[in-house]
Image (tube, rainbow, N blue to C red; front, side, top):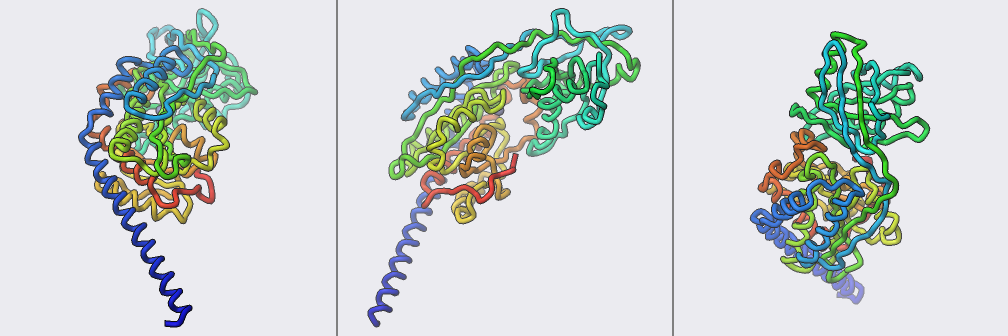
Length: 469
Ligand SMILES: [Zn+2]
């Protein structure tokens, strides 16, 4: 061989050896991930975590004393599990007090309806608001009502939520809850009543945050159970001018403390590069926050702990248990603000915040050149029933703020057929958690976290930010 040919052959051999090394490293990572899956399927730790949180703390309203106790619980637990760098990153938010609610229909059919105040709503004057009701079948019909046309009336948006496998009916239904109050106020309404953004018929009302538009007066807003929304529609058909009395003592209570709880499994080779697993510590106050989001806390914490038991990942795995997700991703926004200089080092985000419905699809919001690495993860997850998904992902609730700020993301779609029967209701309790399904989620996150933290070259953001959620 001539000298030049020799050099080319040498380079080729070196390249092949490099590829072979990378290939065998990937094969090792996949074997490790399969071992993690097996371990996750038999673990009790996830169940114990959600049991402990929902029993010892119970409901954890953002900014409340209970949410503070949940932070102390999380710090103690993460330390006990051997996480490093365990700490709280504090922030504040405008607090809210639920108070009491009563909704009554007047003569000639007097009766009480089951309702809950929408999160962050103002209350009524003492003694309540009594007024006739104007019913709208959809939020669009309310929007189409002329400005000022609801003066002296209570608006009722009776739009149903559609049950779907991945829960996408919520994206439509939640609009009447979030934006409805200010749309009704702009049309002159004294208050807004909505049919719950939920799919059950358990005579439970679903709470959840509203979002006032600063340009409109703040009017009180509440949700009726699906059964009671049907009932009110029938009563209005019998007597269109029947009066309704809404009495609510909800109020905003000024700035209150909250915080994000962080714990890490430090990386061996690139400790400053981070795979971030999220869940949220706060919950609404109607149930004990088991599926929203006690199970998410259990899933990501247990997955990271199983990884640490198995071996040290090359990059750091950081668990962030966000505070104040429910009132509007307030903990996540505080996190991005505090970590903006570090954003380029966060090579992957994903959040578990959808109960324990089994993971059935993996969506990726990453650079095109990294897709083969994500496909290698998917290949390991296939026996758990995970299908390839879309090439866009926000990563989930809180971490969508991080992916919007440029972090690569993976979203695991879960079976959501029954999730919105329980979501934000008194029925969100530990007995709804299925341990096998919980462990399937833990298995997915453990294998994913391991392979993402070890992936050669890491992950990079997609050319265009995700529009997934
Ligand atoms: Zn949640």
